[in-house]
Length: 480
Image (tube, rainbow, N blue to C red; front, top):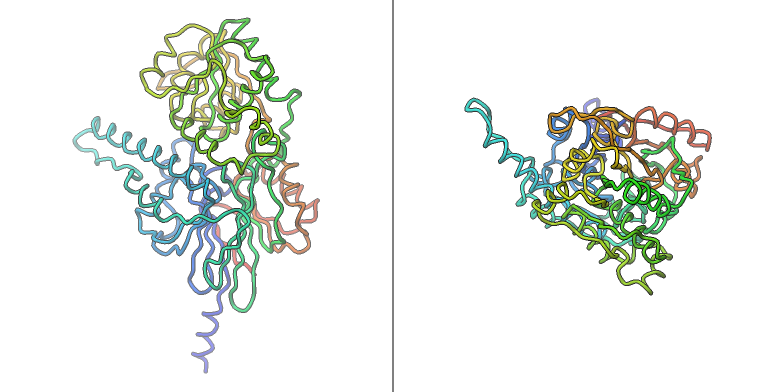
């Protein structure tokens, strides 16, 4: 009888959730749900980005065994949410990857681009390694990406999709980027039903392009992003007016260049939309405007292919303007040779180039060639990790390290706060306004800097959410 009792005690396990990324940090989204029957559900599988010398180490260790993960649900296609999926597959994950149609389309583009970069970096390192150094291998390859995309299974917004008899999935629009979704799981185990929501990244309720985040059913447990949990994205003027003011000051008055580090997905399209709006009003200065990012070109096409994600204002505009991302003077730069030639051209212009944190990509070359001239402006239009080059510029550093050089910051550095695709604390609280705090058993804050999360947790408690946790890296919780 004693042995039997022990056996029953061991089998009566509780559902658990462990946080293997974006825990007291902004990037590397990975949250693992373990059910009492051994099923493991992974929410996102993102890459750590912009965290200095520890970034590679963090991306080399999952904290769990990919072969034991049963299924994966992807909130959206940003690299800090999907970037390690091919590595997960390469290490043995064979389950389905659930995502919206637009997320799958965008993930294909972003992951293939990422694979090329990893392969090129490994090849470069091996060409220059010493005889006694270990040969470098890429984090993942294009072959891994092709296999990964083959494991995707698309689920439409609003559809109640039964993964199996115990697990159902529903996506609602999160309004962050094309295809982005909040994830809602209904899980049946041990005779009870649990409703769990993962917000993914939450967008703005007054986004230039996208629909507002949608409401959702009451959840027992919520995993919620908190990137701007202590900020308000308030600018005195609309985005297009701010851009026009900077173009006039830098390009027309000082005869300089504006360099805009911008994420290929979301931010670049918002800037193009704002500039197009200026042209429609007859206000856009006659200059050259460059998008120097092949990835941004492909991402813009994905957005054009998914009109369902647009807000009503954009849908009305499409009735009179069939291409809301095109205007006079715009050029998409493809080749590296053409990109380099921009730095030899002294004429005033606007260059939009990735990456948004200025941690990689062609924009670093543009910053290097223009940061030392006070005629120029570096315009930051989104979140930058404090350790990234963009974060250092945003913090007002007078000199920065770039390509092993110490460069003096002579160019003007400006920011447009309201261009973040992440909601501010008012947006985040509005996202939760459809919930009864008294029925929420636990709210986990992820995707944020710890100090910001602590302040946002206080706001949530003031709103009636009494059980707010801020998980640390690899921390695991038992769910009642």
